[in-house]
Image (tube, rainbow, N blue to C red; front, side, top):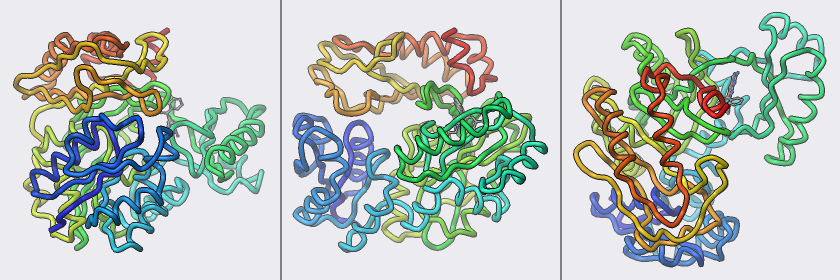
Length: 443
Ligand code: MV4
């Protein structure tokens, strides 16, 4: 078993990984920037190393400094968390070149899924339903034929995209060329890859994703779905599992297809297949090859510790869980707590002058903040996740209402009130919401 793991991240996810390591009897190394010297992940780790100044570019994204830290502390493996270097193929390769295990998928799969066009092709070839689209934009006639078939609206997406950059929605023919050119320029600037593709734009889908877990022996399990439709500017706000609109039958059908596909490509580690879901049909969009922010709702309804499993399969162990042993039980909801103004959404870093976090049965708080902690302005504004679990969805929802009321964070602005507003709407209570929920709420 790994003796020591370096955690190449900060905040709540660094703590999440530290906790799994401690339970597995593995020593931990935290890395941190100058401004994170007093961060909780540094305090909780067995060892810590400063890898650079405040800017993420010079610290948490600084590959040479992180490799040096890993070599100096003699770790067996590196866990990248989410964000930062978690889906960086070069980072995964360099780590392995240093005979250190990257806790994540093979670098070939990071690369494959990093290109959304390739990802869709592979999924299509392995029998997963994808959104109708066209990848080759060199022939105007082919584009015309495609649009004649699927009709407007159309969405232009960047092959290396994510987070809405290089994306354009086109509702009429006159706007198409301009949208493609603008998307190309934006994609080149953001991802240094000007490749874009077209898809039929679905106007009111849900965003539903399937969690997979695979070992290096070809064993694959799926762990149900997460409904992540409550998002604003491509930042998820609330996630839940299971989704209230899926029947056991359509859950099993899509899960079977995901397992078959992952087995066929020889995927290893945890992964998430992102789908749009409209009129009872799934359409694959992209795959995330990392542990995701919202993984706790899956852990709550399956009872499976995804980070421990991730570490075990990276260590070359066979999955001990069989698909038939995975039973989704109860309901879980996660609210992402951000340090930001509830109406303007402007980040609100600064010192937390008073802090009380909710507790009790069915409440989980994944956060790295504490009383007196100063939130630096250099990183993401997400300061924690509030997760509730109940035997039924209404119980999980009642607990969320109670927990949000109990949560005290003074000195900074947070989106706690916004969460209260969202979960008290009839649409949220019904669970029938789609990706347009937030734009309708604010209007
Ligand atoms: C779509 C879509 C509808 N139809 N693709 C959003 C981020 C990226 N992961 C892909 N996204 C979408 N892709 C098709 N074919 C709807 C979204 C989408 C979205 C689009 C525009 C503005 C806000 C959005 C919020 C969530 C999802």
